[in-house]
Length: 343
Image 1 (cartoon, rainbow, N blue to C red):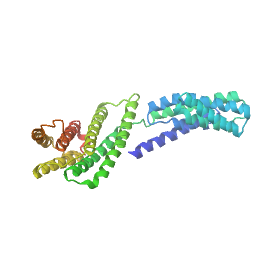
Image 2: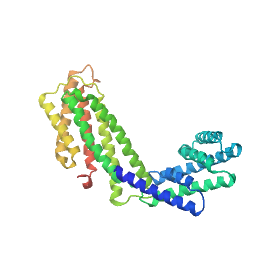
Image 3: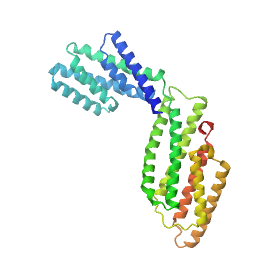
């Protein structure tokens, strides 16, 4: 996945740099500023390229203007570099042109070295070369190897699904087998999953923005919709696991038979998430009904024994409630599944 993403970006950067430099040489303009603009404007999506390009153009104009101003006042000197950089950064920051701050500053300080006369003409040439860089990089991003993040999203969801199976096993091993040794491992794993979800969300955002210029159609569109829903189901599972790991557990009063049944139910969940072909809808629903029955049985018994404290939730009910929620989330996940994921 990373190779495909990086490889496409490298190819498009090379094409954008070549076309930008070639056009500038045809016009007998220095290509360096246009090339810099083309490189930094090549974003993950066409939409980002356009949005940031709109910001980078005025930012570059500001940098060029300051370079021309301070060259005319102080010539090619250290104070010129300093003032051009400082004033460009301050102005871009004040005008909230943050996406263009770097390229504007680079343009400002680079211009000082190459401008010696005709300052007014040099200023407009810099604006023209910046425009060339923006237009070329955006065009390359749109027409050459258009971004398509569907495969990356599906691969990331498969990875999250398998890590979710590991986390279910770790959390319930800690609870049911009283295995406190993996407590820190579980907490760290759940924390890392938040970053994984954020990365998947970024790819989904990229694909949504890209759909404005390259709409998904047919099965690809269906896959993308299902991927978003499945990611939501996996996130819900981790939410309930986090509830369990952060809930103080007291002594659990289940019998060995009940504990054994719950461990079997957990093993079934883990197996189905590790390998979709192991998911049996009928068996899953039967187990879900049995866990539900145990929940209501424990609820009734505990309510009788705690009549004076009706708002008290013992660990057994908390565990069963979260487990039922996880069962339902897994059912929802596979309701959206199709043949392309059962591999």
